[in-house]
Length: 201
Image 1: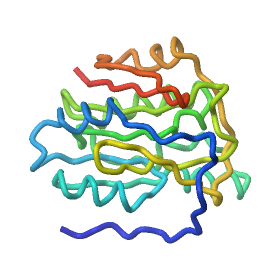
Image 2: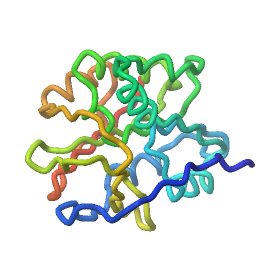
Image 3: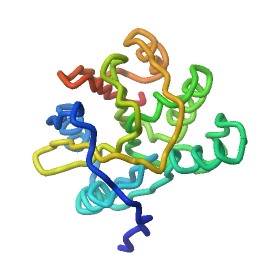
């Protein structure tokens, strides 16, 4: 199995306010993937070698589309940030799981709704999606990757090459955006991270 090429960035440490945490949703997500030996997952980035290795040891194939990097390039070129769908040109029903690490916080309401509808189409029936988002008062000023460690622990890594606007969505709005899915569980951690685990019917 070929390992995807990982861009090399100059990483620095996460902001002190971003406390590590153990993800209850990630545990449920991984443990409830249907047939891991043939499962395929889509990760929208930022690219993280630890996450790549984690999933490649557990599933058949990991597809990576670093939307953070792509939208950042569009922004620097003065192109509309809303052109998300064109990067996710996969066939309907391609994936057993989709990872949205803090990505919806960088899209406006219409763009977020469009992305979630597309993810619903890309998932197989009973496929699952994990969504993370920050509470407004805890949201870091810069973008960080969610880096997976043993025991479902998450640490943060600053992505100082990325500069995207940040939006805030209440729990009610996020639940409404995800209404096409069956909500499996949601949780808010003490560090302000909100996790939503949902499943396509």
